[in-house]
Image (cartoon, rainbow, N blue to C red; front, top):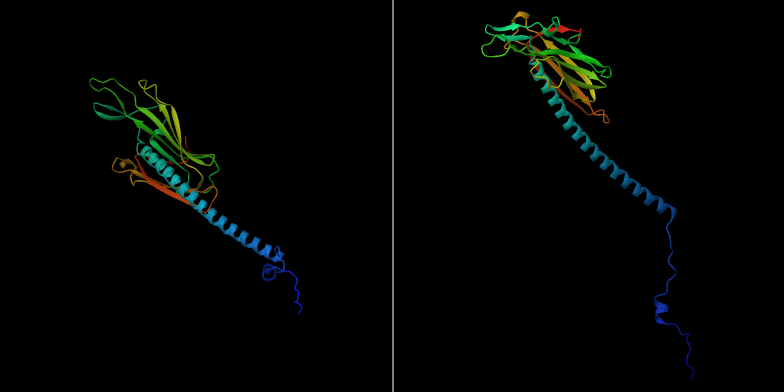
Amino acid sequence: MKKLAFPETSLSAVFFSRPAAKVGMTLIEIVMGASILAMLFFFSYRLFSSFTRTQEVGHWAATTTKQLRNGLTLLRNEMSRATKPEVVTQRGSVPFDTGNGDRELFMYVPATIPFETENVSVDQKLLHFYMCRPGKQSLPGETDIAPEILSGTLYLEGGKLKYRRQIVTQPADYPEKIGAQSQIIAEHISKISITVSEVADPDDLSVKNRNLLTIALTSRHPRYTASTVTESLEGTFEVLVRRGGHP
């Protein structure tokens, strides 16, 4: 009896052999994958950009607010010292003639009050006033000293709001003092407004009865123009008001 002959084939070849797998991706799959990656990158960029902008605007607002407050506080303190030139004698305080006419008797403000402008690119004076440190004369045991006269000017220059203090007349006893110094009050100004309230009787000006000046400043972010910071102050002063005609 003959035995049937079968071809020699291993079991692994019988049970594990499969058609070759198809290698590669279709064009549609590639496009869909690229689109998903692009969307992920886009949303990640928007999220990062929004966070960066928030951080930048927040830092700018805090820095600008501090600068405005410090500058306006300085201006208010300087304005409160605006007084007529005087010397202290045994009989009290008497006027002092500086040879500068009556300029030291006024706070110079814009010609039109209330004043408001958004055109900050034009260089101009906004405020000008004089401060007097009373001198001494005929006081027992003390050397006569002429008063020290300083001027304060608030002005726009190059789109920045600046304050300048300058010595006009100075006693010979203090030759080492700096003649003039300037400070930036605010940058990136977009709006300035100034109002003045005067006392009813100009002859009644005193420490307890003073004129009032209000100034409001708005700064705008140089890149994100929708972001602004506004600060204002009220400052009192003891001299007359003159509109326009700045020295």
